[in-house]
Image 1: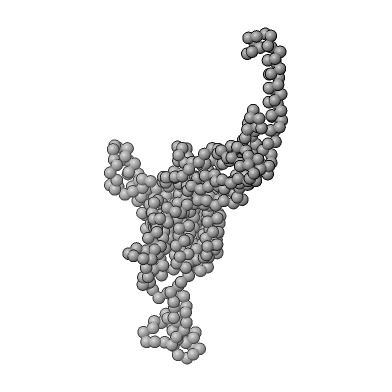
Image 2: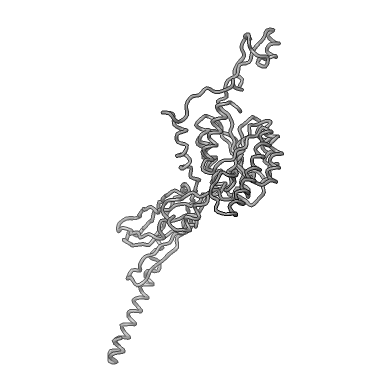
Length: 439
């Protein structure tokens, strides 16, 4: 401007412009590698729960120990909602590293990897912004959250007051052989050990004890039917304020409910000293964990389930039943978590359950689809369309009732459960089986 207004000052203006350009170029050259020595460290593995606020510890190493203002950001997958897009960090002078927490909320369970972190600072003279992409290695294992289910079942695990688990008389005399004793008047013929009687020359009676360790297997259907929405569950925490984030977290599928309920049942079986096993299937067997106990086994079940996703495949009940008959020789409690509102699949399921029910105790549980209710149980009728919709729901409910009766004749118990009460009902079924000594 000075050179344009005063022609005699043009040489000086050109000199100033040239000097500024040289200064800016020198600043760029000196600041090119300013972030090269800085490294970012994340934990190799971080275990968190879905829809619960968490934080990621971040360590920035600064070998030069020079004070430096930074802008920091992480390349998060869309299933991980960060509380912020970037963070201002000040590396203090004289310190070789700085630590801070990056808050986030995982919206879905699964295995996610963080591979890139991004840094930005000002150049040495302040003319430029220097940016760099730093490779990092961090595995985020997002497990299904069972906190809400445990809160609803807390009273069942307490042992005080009017609620919780209490000692109750168990029905039956047990099935585990304990010892032999001399015959007493009144002993039944089925209690006499005939081989020992023949050897000793006088009647000998078998004594049984109540089983203390039983096998409980949860069998999860991960086929196409389990990918349907089960209902809305609100998510909370940093990063879930946006409409898109809430929508991604608000629609749990049937498979999500199956997984959380299975983990709750595993904890109940562990508390009562039983062995818990897991089996997942689609058109073939996916994961099979033989029934065991202990915290390490529970961790193995959780690791097997947190990466399980539904597949667009029709389930093969012939395959799963053949597998169970070949692998499980001892009588066990088999709890199926599946959907049988498809008539073709229901017919195939019925044909195979007769073989399993003769050896094992089989319980089949299904989440009730939305709108499937008996007629005249709902009052939200505003027009003719609502009448036809409720009539259709009644017909579907009647088909499921007929399925229940058919399975009952084959020795299989079928239950149509509400989404919110799935875990509670599974634990209640397990307690009932334990009390009545049905296994």
